[in-house]
Image (cartoon, rainbow, N blue to C red; front, side, top):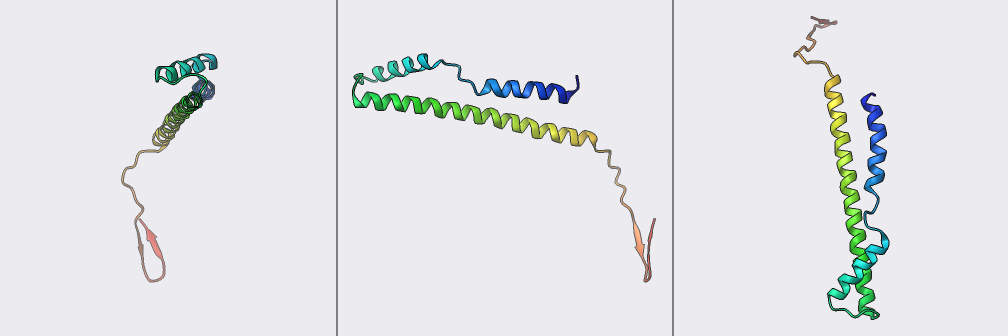
Length: 110
């Protein structure tokens, strides 16, 4: 399989797995409850509801930051891959530059 074929198969699979949460919602909710009660906040109060919302917000921010890091890594890998292909496809440079001399009426190349 050519390199482009492998990349076209693996890239969507890795991107799809990078966006999925590893913690089920019920487990995340229980973890938030445990953390808020560990802080000494009584369940059923307004402060407890605020704590739960803050925990959910923190988890969402961590998920977004993780997805951005994964996307940045893929973008960096893509840029490096394009640069490597461009470097591999360019021929060697031997310092040849065309020289010319221009007279009054015309130019000569040598």
